[in-house]
Image 1: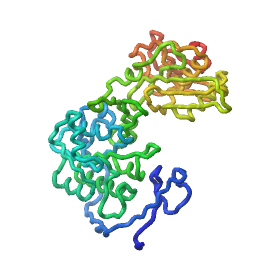
Image 2: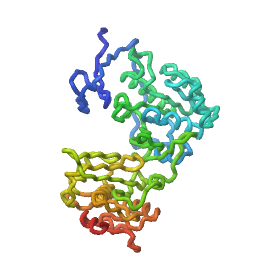
Image 3: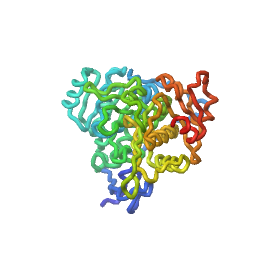
Image 4: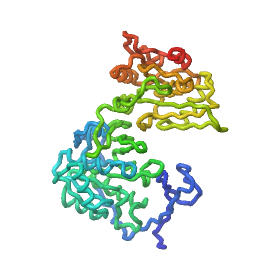
Length: 449
């Protein structure tokens, strides 16, 4: 092996590297996840170019307003903060077949610009044209190239001077400067760095499509997410026909914004009213169902939480959570047994957020507990009720942020019995007594059962 060659071990789960072999990753702790990779250059890089430009004092820096390419799709523009920023680099990740390529072809036809370059290392030009024909997209501004060589891509960018470049996917790219195969950690990292440099130097907007690992994170080194300006995830529940576009990093807008799309024969269509979409099939007078309002970024979304609590016939009761963190569910079950007096230790518990949404915030705790109590008592919750609040270990209902926006969303859909934390009640104009403040789960159960 040449002296300049180096061996690194990359974690297939988190993407971080370490120089020595061990049974598990020292960063994320995953066992048997280390992949050995030899980093070897074919040719020496040119020495770094000297820059005679002097650093600029902060108080003399001239700022320019960001120029954005708006897509015209309200749900997508909401997530990106108003469209793609000129000179930015965006990474879109998602499972295979979820619709990443489809949504990118759809978006390009709505963007302003004279020329777009679409590089695909996974599909032929005929396949892409077939998809565009199915979506009824015929736009001569979109130039297709089935090339995954970095040097060739950079040459075509320099030759065509496009406004926006799409790379599908970053894991298929390779550079002639390295012997590593496409998709390896070294190739992904180096190709991304080169594209990021071109984007910043030329003010070029670049969109990268990326694969994800079995754990749901972007495949490749973690530095890939640090290099880009925006990271978007296109998600879906298993066998569901809707898609959720989620922002987890955005240097030009707020994070944790969510856009909802529905998969149809003509492509991904934006859902303008997500709350109505997720409540469309709700059945009244069924035990174990409760409504809550979750904040996804700046948007309130009404969700239905279903719980099924049945007597266990096994030694260890089952606990299954879909859309709710498993550890949070275990905590709420313990609170319900200790503070509410329900025999949860002898019952199996299944909790599901309808539609496949994944909610991390604590404001839905009150609805989860209400749904479980309703199921174990086999008594339906009044159909006009909404539950919003965090639950402490003492069974108390604690205050939450954005209470005005949540209550307004619930009132808009005709719910007139909204249970919120007692401490939040003073923030609400409650002349019609539709909002009820509760201070504990015992107080709540005394009113609804």
